Amino acid sequence: MRVFIDKAVHKEIMSFYRAALSHHITLDEATVLKKLDRLYDALESLGTYAEIYPYARLKADWISKGYHEFICEDFHFAFKIYQLEDGEEIVRVHDATHSLLYY
Image (cartoon, rainbow, N blue to C red; front, side, top):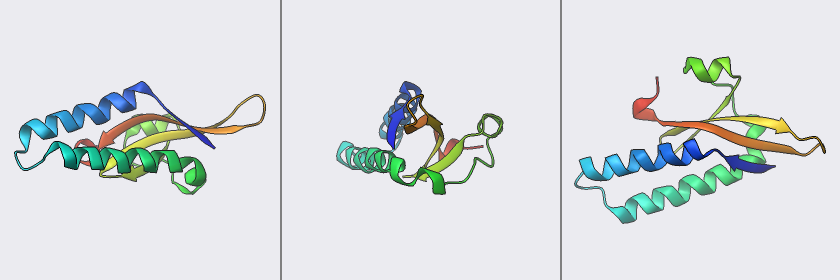
């Protein structure tokens, strides 16, 4: 399945890492870039394994919208599987939050 990532997800990831870089003197840009590479690679592979992930269990908004939850690099991602008119199934990642902010 193809994977589509909402702009809000990109924004959330970048916002978190910008704040992390400014608050943690031991964290460097090279480390963050490696984390981002791993994170986006994992999100792309989500299209292969999307069906195995459970529905969201803690975040009320995600539960009410019927999102599944995927965790990678301490980020929780909310996604759904959709079927297009031509029958193709896609994965759309709607939201993200870091584990430290997940409640």
